[in-house]
Image (cartoon, rainbow, N blue to C red; front, side, top):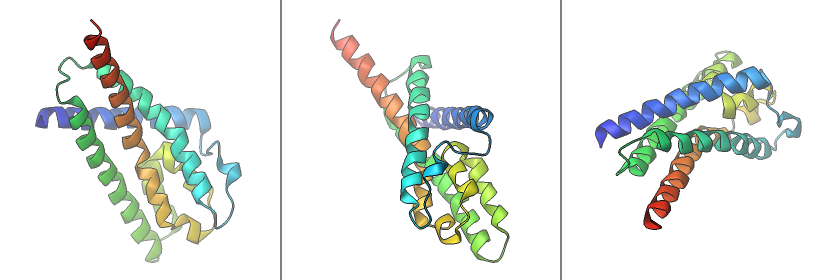
Length: 166
């Protein structure tokens, strides 16, 4: 089980890097939904950002299950690995938050933006400091995990139903 969790974690990290590179090549430093940003109303762009990232990770999670031979505890391992991955991104968000509020330059947000590019790139162009430092921005750390687990869940259910029908 522990080996499966580690494999899921590194697979999610590799998927994250791949999606980050692809997203960066397609959109550059702009998020497709940034035009919907309004000062002091950051929740809309957060939801749009999460909604953009979740399908990418769901497809990756779906494909990840196809590549695995032993699927007995795969969903449980994917959930645990995703929680650890979310915790890692949350710690990076907290570090960026603390550095930016304690007198360091605003470029410290690049630590978090680059580590969670598909979801957090929305923060790159926010100029209102209360919006940038909003605790709601921490929600962007959940999208890789939610999407990955959703994809693994859908594929696992699909395989279990197809086996039951035989």
